[in-house]
Length: 121
Image (cartoon, rainbow, N blue to C red; front, top):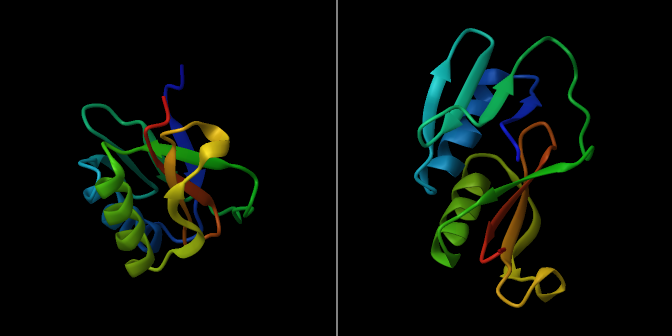
């Protein structure tokens, strides 16, 4: 149902380092790259970061990224923190969302919330 997600970022190179680290642990790679945008996916561009010279607004929502399992959630969470992300909820079961829902939350360099999830559906 979602074709793609795009985040406006203030510093494309800084955000790219963060998302390169996070996505590499999930088997997701850069699909597109230009002076003002980078897109990630496995086969098609699904997650975009774009620099348009506007200031991003933290906490406007979040993007949930599906992982193949708990190990992948743990690895992506650690990589995101190592790449300058901030913890916004450590890896854990989230029974409120379902009996197998395992997730972590990180804030990207602009304060945008990214959820890493396995077992959600």
